[in-house]
Length: 244
Image (cartoon, rainbow, N blue to C red):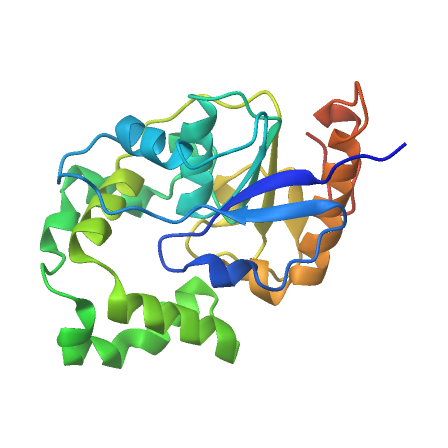
């Protein structure tokens, strides 16, 4: 019996674009990328923004896969439309998993300190790029190029809006089917604060690129389980999974 491919809609993180998924090769799936949008106004709500993103989803009951802020957005979209599952990579499921420094900066409205011009116009900022890339886990030439390109071209309104949403996320809802892949060397979202279903050894925040083989295997097995009628998330066992 022929089965159609699983449709996986992918959301990159704040500091990247769809290129971070270029090393993923997952059998029997179609990876479809959801691009970030410019906020319609400075105070556009996260729900309103998620609705606009969701309007670009053309398949019923898709799988959503998000990296970092993209994972948080995937959860927000799952509140609005039926989805088969949500797969988080290097992300958090709820406000309780955010590191304390982000919560503090959110209360201080630290995003207001971000410049209102493109970052590439502020040349002194380029000096700290190696430090930023270290915390991102962007170590390969491809990952560094993506991170640096983002800084050069990110829209200031989008950057401020996104940082505000991350620092002030108040979510405590979890989709019925959720899988969470996380690296034990993630410096932005330390493993000690999160409860993933799968832990990637030596994986940093950019592990979707640096540890693509492990992620291909895990996501492939998740999707194979989802394609079986009646198979629930708790019945899917994949390498490195401590249990759902």
